[in-house]
Amino acid sequence: MDSRRDIEILGYQSFEVLKDYMQRAKAFVFAAEEDFGIIPVEAQACGTPVIAYGNGGVLETVIPLNKTGVRSQESGVGRQESEGSPTGVFFDEQTPGALMEAVNKFEKNQDTFDCNEIRKNAERFSKERFKREFKSFVDTKITEFFS
Image 1: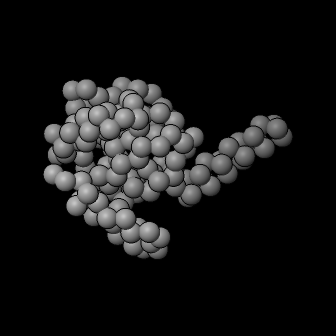
Image 2: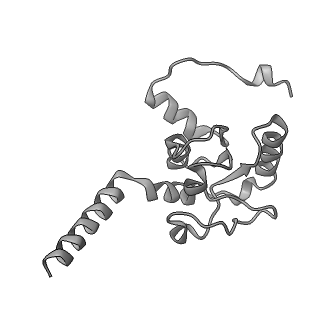
């Protein structure tokens, strides 16, 4: 495989074009380290598995496969709701070799990923859920204050 023929630089694309590419992608590679990183969540909202550098915010937003191809037992925010299906694969170093290993791991375990479960995982970070839980928290604190 000659990656120069497999990669095309598109420049700026509209949200709709990006969404279309993301929905049709086999996987989304996220090699950056960010505190939260909205892009891996957006990929999952499209049902697309994420191959990510296993550091930063993806530890909270992506449910990884472990070495044997089953979901890792790592804890994270909201993980109890997402016990079942993995949503991606992590690599430990930001090197071409580590990324290549993660891509190969993804390829070998591709049938493990369920696009509906991946979408469901992304819903943990929806605006609607945030509003609902924030309102519930504030209501609880107000009730406690006046009790």
